Image (cartoon, rainbow, N blue to C red):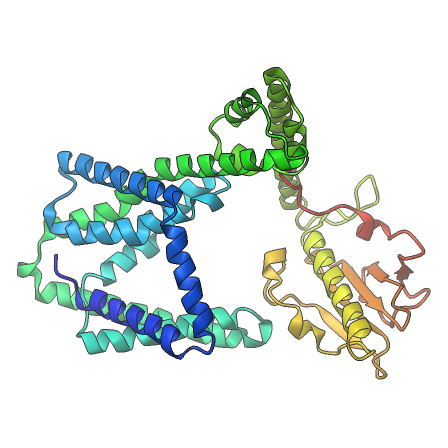
Length: 443
């Protein structure tokens, strides 16, 4: 039941971090206010009910495991750590769950994957408390630098260096753990180690039904609370709300994605049958959109590396077309905003402000090239897609004009009539720009 040196060091570092934030941070008054609000929100009766249900459910899971000889008092500490530091965050994140299938896959990877096993293994041995304090501080700093370094291509080497150091430390910890276990083998409780390993797998997995049920209830509650706002603040009849609850078919996916036009359509219903029809239409639309997105992804995979054009004259290999056009459009509006709202010129190093493009589907090293004229009154940028097709955007002193480019070669000049450039403010976009390559939205 006693805490290991590693766990004690973790608690010390957490306490020191909290104290530093509360005592020395410049905005400590705001932090203290946020902490008070957090505690106030926690003691909301709905939150307390959810936590109570969770603790009862977790206790039931442990009791069942004990009956099956999968749990013993020797792993009580590990059980409490798992319940409060693994299970409770999963419960808190229940409102963010959009798909039960994805949740199961995610938790499965995190509990059964190689990284989870290695984390469990290196936790079997620890250094002295001062050594653990130093080690964990170094790990936190390296992890933060790695995350920071991955935000921009210019600092990618920093991230790679930190990742290498983290890997070497991990190998060292594994070697140290192996040495410690071998040298103290006779004193080990192999049964408790096996039970603790099993606990780290079966308890998170057994929590999944509760998390999914809570996710459905929370999403459904959100929808029901929004219906009146889509019908002149008139609450829908109970039969309509019942039709909604029945119509989501106890599906996290259906409950979490009920938004947009569907809120208004359901809110205006007066009968159970009418609400049922709305839910049937909703499920049909969801299935259609999900299948359309699957087809789009399959086409991208099937046409990968295929040269030429299709029956519509569009490129067959369209990898990263959607992401490239989206990021270039974003870059265009950034340049226009800079010129209009700042100093009356375009920014030559705007790519440094572009941010993380991986969330849009481009690699970290995005390969976008930017050119700004010497007088800073004209610019253009382009990117080559994996199929060798180029997209470009640009602008000049006339901020009302948006220029687009596409072709088998990069643009050779600043935006102007000809040279492959198109003024899409006065003319239609060229075929590849006009094609809809964006992912199909669920709703």
